Length: 225
Ligand code: GRF
Image (cartoon, rainbow, N blue to C red; front, side, top):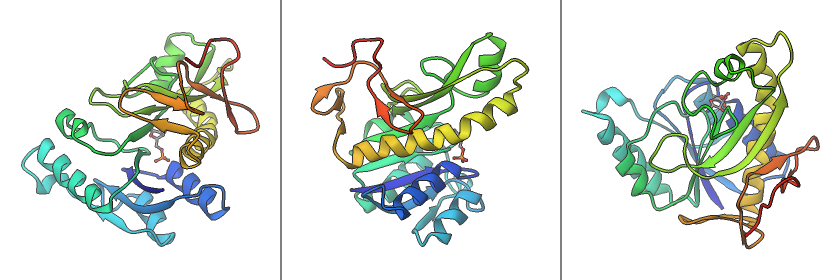
């Protein structure tokens, strides 16, 4: 399986994928890492790992769709089986996303459908949530709204601040993204435009990450059609 990863910043989720692949836990080829920020730490992590990098500057394009079309043309040249958005901080043009011929997934720091968009940790705290977490979902033209494949949960503790919560969640994000990509690479998860399939059956509720960093069906609800 060939993947491409889109990044904009720190790249710790990308690093988790690179490390898992180095450990032999992810049977896939990272064809390239692409970014809208040529100097971001994530691109450095990719080149340090010997991965092809692609940087496109939004300022070189007249508008958002033109940038997105150029980015997706570069991705298309790679022939990816899967594109992973791992801290890619741009909203993608709906028509460009709709025209992609490969599945795309995104990692988002909330228990979707709660808190699409930014400031997820502060919003969870402001709402008095006792549970917080991260989701990996299929990318569709509407932001942070595609079917959720898998989630990792953490408890909110008294005195948590947005920063503390973000810090505690981050290692769970890494484990969540890695475990999800592993199931896709092992063909146990299949992403079709119509549905997510897990072991050949339609997945109705997100898989849950356990403390051993493995994904399983949620025992409290009916998960498979
Ligand atoms: C993560 O919190 C991810 O959920 C969100 O952006 C952040 C990226 O972090 N989409 P990193 O660049 O992977 O360290």
